[in-house]
Length: 227
Image (tube, rainbow, N blue to C red; front, side):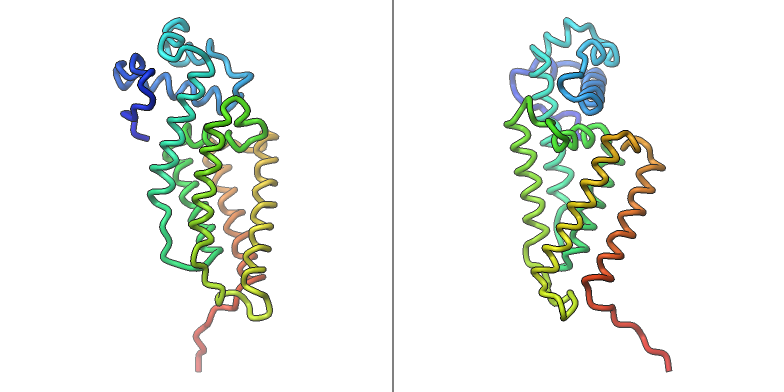
């Protein structure tokens, strides 16, 4: 993420700090809010992790809510630059598009773990409760990504005995159920996005899931016939 992102002008005092100190504050706050949510997040813990006085933290941001909203703006900008800028398709294959969306998300989690974790917290239960404006922007961004997924699909790739539009609907239902199951396991603490081994295992499960969906809904790929 570009640490020079400027955000709202009333945060000028914060942006006047040296970049290394800005990064310490942002990283500490992202971790605290992503892990604990708004209610349980502690400004004392953020100040301690960032190695700044709590009074200075409130001087920069005014309140816990303003700090949270600053991070919302920060991560929305992150998502726009890291997701939308890369999200272009050269295929009309619905399943392949969904795989690409997931792969972009995977890379973002690996390269920008903290902003991605905070952004994902918008979609948890109550995640947008304290800042509906930004939750709405996050959902609008997600809707924009999904519009890209559904635009100009090639329905001829699906099996002949299944209506292509129905197949897309069924696959989407299964993706949604899969995502709910993953979210439930994540919320139970069964894995963490900072655990590289656990994430690798999740991506392997996802690849298998996509392969099974292809077997169920797509035409069989042409194969070379040996004489």
